[in-house]
Length: 82
Image 1: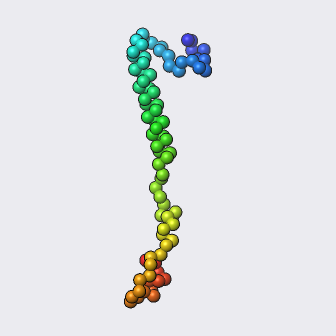
Image 2: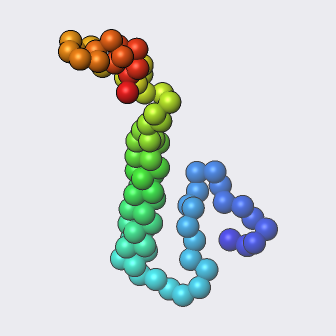
Image 3: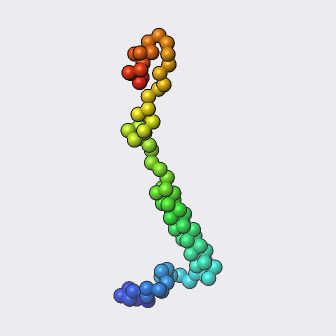
C-alpha cells in the first residue's frame, strides 16, 4: 500500500512496513494491543462510574439538629446545634 492510498473502511488497521514478521508475532502484537485497549476502556468506564468526593455543602444530614436532652442548660442547646 503506498502512502497516497488510504485503507478501506473495513480493511486492516495495522500494516507491517519493515521486516518480515511471522504469523505468531503478528498475532502476539494484536493480542497485546487489544488487551491494552480493553484495559484502558475499562479504566475509563470505572473512572466515570466512581462517584466523586462528597461535598459537605451537599450533605443534607447537616440540616438535622441533635436531639434535645432534658437537663441543666437544655434550653440553650435547643437553639444552638453545636
